[in-house]
Image (cartoon, rainbow, N blue to C red; front, side, top):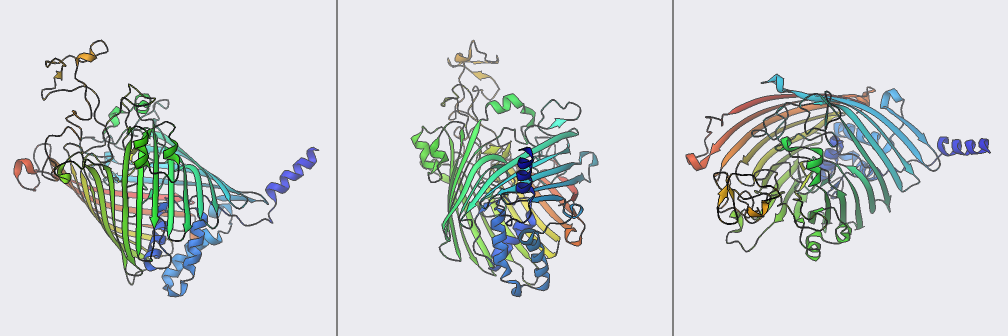
Length: 619
């Protein structure tokens, strides 16, 4: 009996004369060259309007590349070489020796298995202050497979060492050896100092160990007319570079999602997931695995409807919500609006609404405008100057560059109003009564939407090119302006006790005291609420006036870089180099009446020269 069983197992797993794999696993967002290539193929008119929900299933990528192959004759020789590189990797996907591609494959009648390994090293140097440099070294292993034609699974594990500078949270949003507003955590939960591996820390300011554990189960039916996924990974929803709704730099989280394409011109996407705890890059000193997570027990749901009635017009409507963990079937239902459903459940949650309109002409380019409405009080006399109206918007133009192989230029403006993506704490809610629960638009301490902080704007000019097989290059300029006044940071508001300008606590009887409240006398103190918190959106007495109502940080950022993947030449290694120049200064229009750099006291001008080098094995 044992011999028969062993024979059956061997036939099931090891038999190689099976159907080809129908992989529906996600093509992860770190495949930046591929997604940039697909975007340029759309601009050229080689494919129709792409769904604005990523990552794509591998089966969809294969289908898109097959469609693009019909236009080979319209490509230049160099463009065909670049295209052929992607076609070989994803469509043909031929197995090679382990030393050439870093994977082992087993294929059977019912299921397939593929195991990959890889490694990468990144060095980020601040040339002005080498002691503030950092980087990481990461090892990777993944396993994935198919079960019959419609079901796939994947498991991705990484582990490595990380180091950043111990930056000043008052003057920098994240480590200073990285380009401003680009750093994202590449580890799960807390980071572990090598000197105290049992402890959880917010940032690797000392040499640290961290890991990631991402997994998925995916299914696809009817030629990607219905795609389903249950997994933990990074996602990107929306149009533009750094979308307002769910951006590619947002931390991964576990969720159930799907895309339904009943017709070619309609796409309905839905996602419900469980957010993870963390402190923002400004609040890392408040990090504690128990205290931080206790008030960040949140879920996230998002629904997007995309309409493509013609080949030149794109429309989308989107709503989403961050809400405390509880059973709310309306937020899970793929056809129910979160924005409206909250009114049926008591209005405890942080809802948002928005959409995008885009027009394009094949070979000429695309223009788009997106709006994200976090919260609004339409009864305000001046909608645009009221702090209680929290929204962001983005407008941009993308165009292919004639005469250059797979090249495009982007010009984009983004504005994030004060308090956008934040929310007041909720202390009287079902299941969490008495706790000051935070429902900001954050996951792991990082924004789900725009990577900019509230009360910021950004003008971005970006040029990307893939001039030859395995080679990418980019050049960019960013102007970022960020305020330091009310609503300028990722912080909840509306909890604690009211204090006057001298820092004294206000008592219910009208008096004041410097004594801290405790359980025995807390009822004698005036509690902060969303409406009376002077640091909250509803407690502001003045009007907002961008660049004029506080001290503002101005960043001029110039960057350039290139990468070279040698895999197609038989060497499974890739290299990359980036240089960034950052010039930062402060303005104080309230005091000076102009926008000239202050450059005195604590508001000194700052220049940084940043150099980034990386190498990947089995990229």
